[in-house]
Image (cartoon, rainbow, N blue to C red; front, side, top):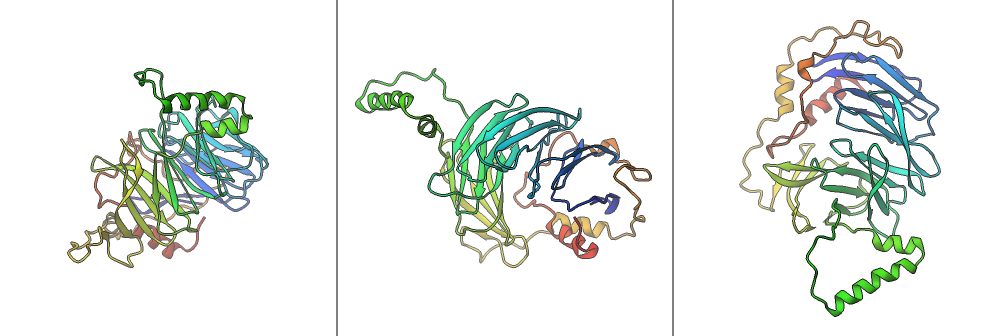
Length: 365
């Protein structure tokens, strides 16, 4: 594993591990390296190894989640290969918190909200998504994604305000759920035949088997997106761009889709723009591409041009137990108080720079 200083274009440190690195997670306090049967926890400021969690259940996909809120740095990872148990670990105090029995089958997806107070999970079936309170581990919400077919959940993410939860899979549908509890303070509806039948139906669920009654009480999607493809791995993000809620979907073939999300009524999300991240096509907006302005210079290209000066020498010689013996400690002022926000629709991740560094350095974990 190589850790680089993005602005300076220099290597901070590098580590070698006993087996393949399956996933890496980090916030402003901790860096997590997940192997198949172990997890390494580093201090982000000096990259010293703080804790090694050994003999974890075989985790062939490297499934784990780390809270981006560095004041708690909660870590979640599977506690079993046969059932959906979640181990909740305190990354700051380096101790176990609790074990959550989330699903009957093995886990497929985990995600914290921005404050680390909620944890969402999905099993390999992909039909039910549950949300738990953290650190208590109590179930808060239960959403049903579908019933007809099992799917592979590829992305599970909260909005920054924790009002919505988005789930995408290998199918053509992206589901957005709204996290809210209905209260009894709503005004009493006038008596009607439909209202009477609804109350009778809900009362009847108390006499049905628990599996059937539980299915009836599960909430459905608040909003959906119908993609024009299926079978591709994709990642979704719920963001606010120019003060408007947006859903961003990026796919493995190098495209980024931008959808509008109605926070009041939900329903079908409308496609606004399509971007090619690989530079193979023009930006499409409402199918009117003839008068598109030239694409502005990307942030990645600007940084790459500024970092063209000779960089300091690399600093190898790091080990799992040695920490940053001769490395560069990251200054305190570079730890910002909050996450990066996309305030401009033309501001996107530094794709060009990342692709260039892989070309220069070769394949790295």
